[in-house]
Image 1 (spheres, rainbow, N blue to C red):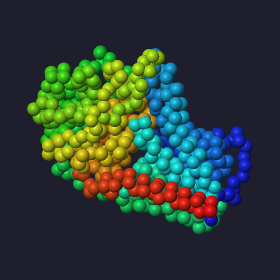
Image 2: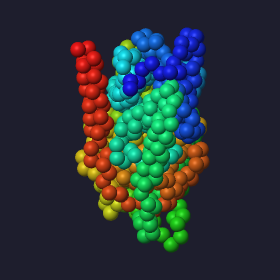
Image 3: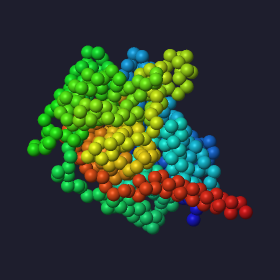
Image 4: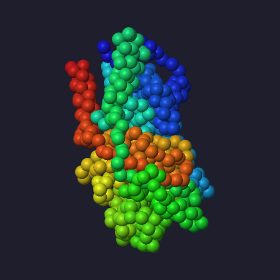
Length: 507
């Protein structure tokens, strides 16, 4: 039986197609934090497939895909306006253009997917699963990539997210879209077998995820780590009157007694991204104060540094003697936030990057690197945005013992952005089976184990620190071994199958 000509398909007014598509996309967006309404998001995904079946092909199919994407990205990425409002007088006018441009631009990937699937007359649903999954994979890489809010992340609040440890985020996206496509088929041509199959596959995704969830570790006797959260609002962060307030707050937290009774000093103290208010080569006295407060504990901290006319967003490690033992430079920078593509062109309109320290923004570091934390093992540093990219974590020179993220989520405001960023950090931990330490300026700071379980955290918008035992790394996951190879293989074989079927029909 083919995917086409469903019994419930019938023409409906063209004016209704656009709002329906946007509406289904927004339902999908409700699966993202802080909503976490994954069942409703799945309904939206099924609705998108149903609408595709009820849409004439060609440009109308592309328009339907674009509208679904616009609804999805417009809702889930609503936090993108926040950076523009930090200095509203200068950049506030860009906020609506930023949201509309980002949502509309990302929706083009989905428009292309719907258009491509519309070329298949006999198996449009299967074709859409392939093209939509391929579009999400492309979104993770094209123009430096932006894999924020992949379709597969809809399972993040549920046990189903554990499948990323086996098939990765793109494999889970394929599985999600395949389930939604079959569900749409079951709606269009109802049968008991199809309904039972839909329910059984859903149960398998959730039940399999529950079985894949690693048991909670016994953390007694494990080294203690401390995460510092100064809660410096972005509009105050570099205010000369407030800089010493936030710095002194972090020094006080660093020197504070351990929160866990009868425990030694923390084996590692972590400050957030750009938490030191001076450049590294001028920070001698500042780092000495931090080291004195740490009382012999190593400190990993976010700091900016300059070299040969370039500025870097960096993580530096102070050893127990206060010396800078290691430095990591962020390599995956935020376009328009940390560097300006075509900087000379935008300079003509006096448009500069939101977080640019110097003309043209930050320079990129050489790539993923490990830092040695002594008895704690090797850590892979991730500065803010870098935790969004599963492929960057895969590129670590060797498997680390932990992931170490420092971030300044004050840019994201106090609503959805910080929670979505946290959710994606959890997914990186699950993918690799590794603990993740996350120090965030305004929150959410958290210690996360290799199963994505939050061991300890500080709420968003609260100043303080947390002490928690460092979880152990789990066994090497299948995804850590294979990366996106399985997803690529599925898409390749599926594409060949569709092409061969079309070729056979032509003959």
